[in-house]
Image (cartoon, rainbow, N blue to C red; front, side, top):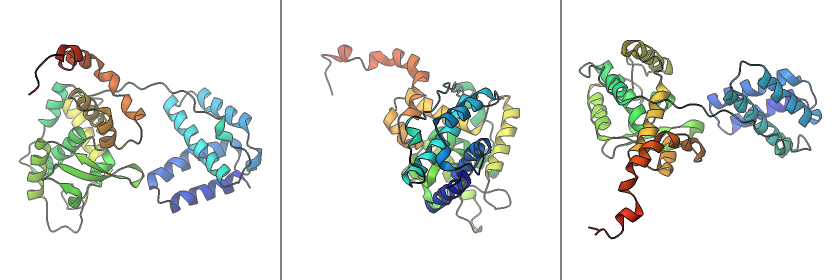
Length: 297
């Protein structure tokens, strides 16, 4: 069997599993790079550790890929090779020794108090479109929603009385996403003004009544970036801001993992170092010895 044949079968398997278009695009891009390097007509059984290491070194020496991107390419290749081994397309479990290269830990940026106040105060909530935009930003910074999760959120998945939404996250996995009182108030006002004659269940609509798209939100942030003079402003920055402030305000890593939709704590731990200074300042409130002997209510 050639690499091309195995690649085609692998993508077909992903479609049968119901993986999202975004996941398919990820595998197509990452594995396509390896096929171009090794040759699509290369026999699968001839792929060995030497070829894989040479490919990994080639990615690192290219100079135009970040360590995180290289890790992403290798992760996709490992998943593909593991699948090939499990399907008995190849006799060697190559990923067992083909490990992920180390990636530099990216610096996580967040909005300051002043920047956050400027952002949320920049919307004229008497205007329906501006109120919609305020709600979009509020859900990102108060609930940690991703860009696509905001875009695809539906009215029937919004539970304002209980203060949460059911969102469709990565890999078509649904999760409960709580948010605060201010966001609930804003969403309640927006729902009163939202056109009720449109034939869509999407929550956020454009002026013409059609659902917003990712482009709609990206254009919004492009304008906000210029207007507020915050060059680094982008949708995911609000998710980082949410995660960091959630921990600073007393939230724990385990509940944050559930809210963000991560399967492990690894992705959540990157926010912990940002809060360590505040943790030291607040420690007297939680010190076991300082509380020893105190009367409990």
